[in-house]
Every structure is written in structure tokens, then in C-alpha cells.
Length: 607
Image 1: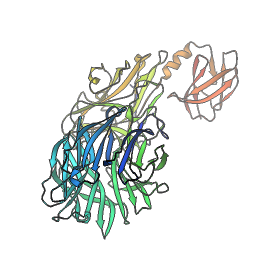
Image 2 (image 1 turned 90 degrees about the vertical axis):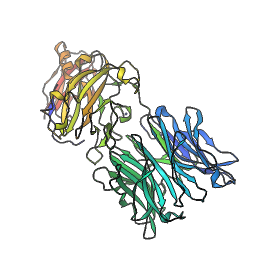
Image 3 (image 1 turned 135 degrees about the vertical axis):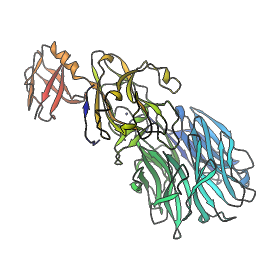
Image 4 (image 1 turned 45 degrees about the vertical axis):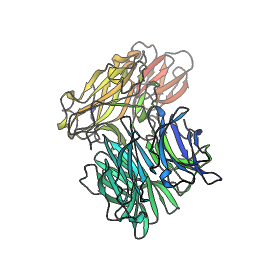
């Protein structure tokens, strides 16, 4: 990443994916009798098929959650029945087992379209079919009615749902003309706990998906302008103080925006235009200017749902037997159009060897992924604030860091690294970039760095507080020396953890406008270790410092020589004889470690 002023303070499955993650896909097909059915697959293997002679089936949404289990909406429409007989059930695929979590009541014509989770509760939204042959808004929580709109002759349907700190936000379309059921009479609307929160009443339209980021709510769908449906993105706030404002349309041609998601402070929207173009629209939270991020029209001209994580952006196309990663097609063994995708990244419990590196970027060369870090909150996040650890596009140019945001009251949360093993014959250092916004709101005894000595037990919310933690750095000691609102480099000695496996914990404590950003976390072999070895080594390197070449004296036969930079990256390997010149002109100026047999030597490369 490109950073501002740095002040040094001493004190990483499925096809096309480099690291382990599970790709869940939902297909949609029609049999020879005209009945709809679908399959649910995991990494190319069909796990479940919903198909029989009495029903048509539709998967309306799915989402991967705890421990790799997948919850999804299974909509049943009995063959030859009226709309009142349709119903939706929430199902779970756990390993090889597939069961219904709950069913919607029969004979009410309930059609659920989206699913959300919070604190173990399952929410879903959609519509029920009224006795007047119109659809009305419906929300369920754990199978019980959470909200059901009044049958008042005004068509109302919910398509998207998200839950934030107990508040349920939904979006959809509502008619303000009695008896009208055509979408050209609808207006896009957002509800909070079933009550209208914001409506875009300047143009007719429908909202299909919703996501909340801090106090802001983003909604995508389509708007009817000049006799043409156009894909659109809207914004409002969770406090209801602002109307639903349209930010932009994706095209002036016939188009639609079907699904949206957040990652790293960016909202990504899947769109299609007039059957000739499809892709992803991106809007950075902060500059509020949507722009086309990439297209995949070379592969297809339709779009489905969208998922984003630190590997990239996953999308589906309603008419293709493949999915897309960052716009590039990924072939699958599934021979049916893929409508839904969910991606689960199991936390890796493997132990990392030195050097450890994490830059929180997308598809970077980090040792682990952002999904492998563990987060723990000591408090409930304040409604309308991002007061917990999350990955964020700090600059708006896809330069990522992690941040703990503020709240109106005192907030606290831990960000815990994967396990890192420090060999018994090696000293190590910890380094990271830190940026503090509004340090005047920093709380005494606040943000700090801690160490957990790992014993191989996976971290969970239930057992995290039981792990002993040792503080090794506190902002109390450096707050006056940090350059406010600029990136500062911190380095911490880990020599006392020689021979141990550790986890690095970043602990935030603050309130009001105080934010803490962390980036470029590294643990590497300390040069002090090399100096200690050099003191007792009969072998030596000369000249030192050197410009174009070096030689080694003190060993008797040809040997492999390996050269590392100061963060432990291997930069050169040669076979050398005693006193043979080894070219180093291609190396950048700096300190290097040279390993020959069991001896490590230190030398300096100069310009």
C-alpha cells in the first residue's frame, strides 16, 4: 500500500481458488412436465435435490453461516393449486443432513424471498397472498410472525432483508394506487421493523436488495423513467431522518440491479443491461459515486446474486452453468443454470511459520486471509456505528486495512491473529502500521497489543475470555509521539516468546470519534538473532558492507547459499565454493541474512 508519513517506533479448495473455502451453488431447472426444481451443491458435489411429482420448487435465497452449514429458502408451489397453497420453508444443510428448520403456515400463500441472521435468530421477508388476490408484506422470525401488513387494497411486497442490533430493515415495492398490482405503479420503499422508514416517491420502481453500513442503508433495484426500467442504487439512513434518495442509474437502457453486498467499505452491485451487458457496479462509502467496476458480458448477459470476501467478488448468471470470480468465468461440474451462490471460508487452524505477513488486501500474497483472523467484542455495537473490527478500503482505491470504529459510548474489541510459531533457535519481532483518528478521544488505558500463548485450541466466542493474555504494547506509552491521522510504524520485540506459538491481539478501547486502523502486520526473524550467531561462527562474509559481490570464507566444500531479506523472504539461492564471488548487484540496498549450512551470517548491501 502507498502510505503517508511513516514514523518508526522501536519498542492465505475450489477450482480457481488458492486457499480453502466452500462454494455452495443453487441451480434452477424445469422438467419435461413443466415443473420447476433445483439442486444444492457444495464444491461441485450435489448435496440435495428438491424434485417430485406434486410440487414445483424454487430456491429463493441461501446463505452460509456458522460452521459451514447452509440455510436456504425452499419455496413450494403445489401443482394445479391456487396461490394460497404456496408456502416457503427454511432448510439447513449440515454435512450430509438436510432438514427443515421451520415451515411457514399453510393456506396463507406465503412466499419468502430473502433471509438474514442475528444472534442465532433467523429472519425472512416476502409476502402473503391476501383474500383480495393482492400480495402484502410479511416478515417471520424463527418461524413466528414478526410483521404482517394490513390487507388494505394497496399491494406491498418485500424482497430484501438485513438485521442490525435487533432492528429489522427490509426493502421492496409498494403501490399507492388501490387494487394496482403492476410494478409500474410501485414505489421503492424501506421498512424498519415493519414500519415505513423511507420511500422514493419521485419515480416508480422496486427495491430488490438491501444492506446497512454504519448509519447508512443502501438499496438496489430498478426505477421506471421515461417508459424504461433502469437499474438503480438508492441511499437513506437508519434513523429515518432522510428520504430514499436515488444515487444513479446503471444505464439509460433497459436494465436492472438485482443484488448487492459490502466488503471493505465498498458496496458492490450486480447488474444487467438489455440482455447485452452484465457486470458489477461499485460505490465506495464516503464518496457516494457509483461506477462500473467490471463487466463479464463476454461470458453472459444476465446477472444473479453477488458475494464478496477477501478473495474477490463472486457473481452468478441466471442462464449459465458457471459462476464468476472478479468477472472471470469459473467452470463447474454442475450442468444447469446457477442462480444462487454462497461462499464459506472455514477459519484455518493451521499454525503459520515465520515470516508471517498480513496486508488485508484482496488476493494478495498474505500468509493468511482476513477470514482467518478472530474478532471479539466486549460490548454491543451502538446502532448506526461500525464499532467493531472490520476490513475497510481506507483510501477508496482498493487499499485495505482493518479498523475498529467508534460508538457514542465506550467501546472495546479484540482482533486476534492466526497462530504463529516462533522456532526455539530464533528471536522475532512484530511490526505493524497504525493510524489513529481523533486521538483526543482516546481513553486512558485504552488501545493496546497483547499476546496469547496458543495451545492449539480453536478460538470461539464462548472460550475466548478464558485464554490468558499478556500486554506487550500500549498506546498510553506512545500517544504523544504518534503523528495524528498519519500512518506510523510500530516494532515490538518478541524475544521472550522464542520457541513458543503465539497469537497477536490488537485491543481497541475508545469512544466518540476515536478510530484505530491497523495494517501490514508482520512477524519476522530479528537481526539480533543473526548477530548472536555471527559472534560464535568461524565462517564470515566479505567485504561487508558490499556493493556488487560478496564471498564467504571458513567452509571446506561447495554448499548451497540462501540469502534472505530482513523480513525473512528468500531472495537468492546459489551453489558456492569457499571464497567464490556471489553477485548481489540485483539486490536492493539493505540488511540481508545469508544461510550456509547451519550458519547464518549478516551483511549489508550498499548502492
